[in-house]
Image (cartoon, rainbow, N blue to C red; front, side, top):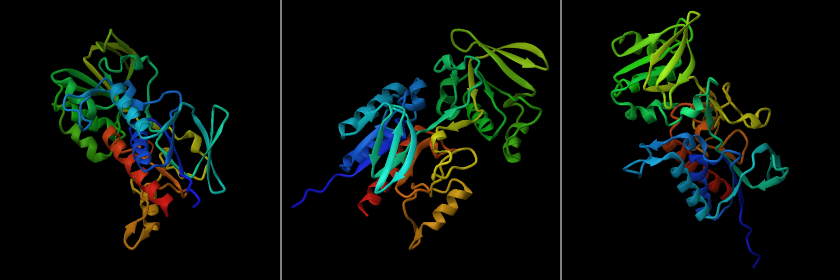
Length: 327
């Protein structure tokens, strides 16, 4: 009897979604190659304490969590390739992935899990990660109990972060670049109707961070500089999904560059899900606009952006890919 060849699956990304997907594809005995790029591990590599990932009652350091997930993926047979995927193209019977290493890898199915990057101001803020600076208030608010904190941003996400911080911080101040919020009216009311909980500084730019950890902020207000004391700083000025190499490809992206799938996070996603209804059930919800290519994590998710939800989406993509390959 002729031996059946094992199917090959490529996973692009080594954050929580990518590693979680690799655990499942490995356990399904799919030949799994994970592309990590130059900075494997995702955003959690810049995080200190992670207190909200299930299974760690005492918390865990971000890089340690990612190393444990990496080891688990490798344990089930995943091969890690620390090259960056530059191009994904459909080929006869599968897909080709061109990397910056000058190679082209073949796969029968692909899972995209590149994640997203928080937007920065370029004022040296990255050296303060874990030292009073964060880009996720929902994740880290509890570490700032009874502290004076600042939130940079004027959109829905910034207001959400500010309100989350009011449960713990002694004082929350929002730094808004313009004369008004960009957030929806209902979100604006949460702040404007509660001036005792959140203070807003309008027409204000953050120019500099001072201290070994976040201790002082230099603000630009009306052409003048002002120095304020701070014990915490949060950026909520948006995210950029790491999907640049997909621009112009057959993979549908939304206006902000996020991958559209049948999970229905947007109008385009809802339409995709509707078109995949079979007997009242959406087939392969994590599949992209290109059949055989699936996606999960922060490259898809512009709403929740949590390590736990990214891991879950990675698992969903892996299960969908496995079922699709079987069929």
